[in-house]
Length: 143
Image (cartoon, rainbow, N blue to C red; front, top):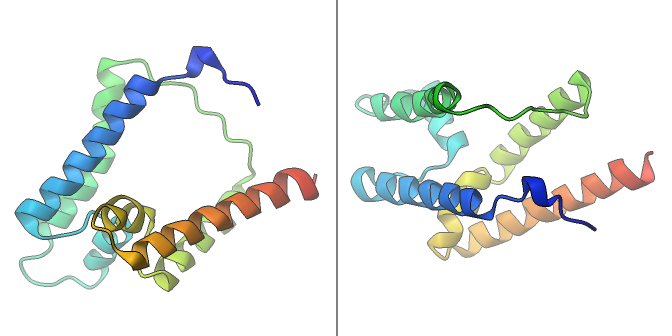
């Protein structure tokens, strides 16, 4: 394995991780909510009175932030090496997994592990193991 040093960005990655952690901590501190994207989005599908505005604001921030970034900095090139069908199947499987696992990687991996939740540790290990396995199968056994 080699490292592409021209694209190695530990400080930017560290800063991004700090910002994600800070945002999750602030949401929990001020709103008492976990920053799990599937739960936030799912809460809009069955809205509860006085529980919609913060969810819409959170999701709008996920959409608006990259747009603002694109205005002030060059956007890196994106290369996706998968077909549309593969992406749709992958998205469907992720959606099913979030329902089965009672949360997504952001809820379990970022917020649950930081709260020392045993359920979130097991869920995150399961997500990661499944991801490793599928990548191995697709990249080494099917090609």
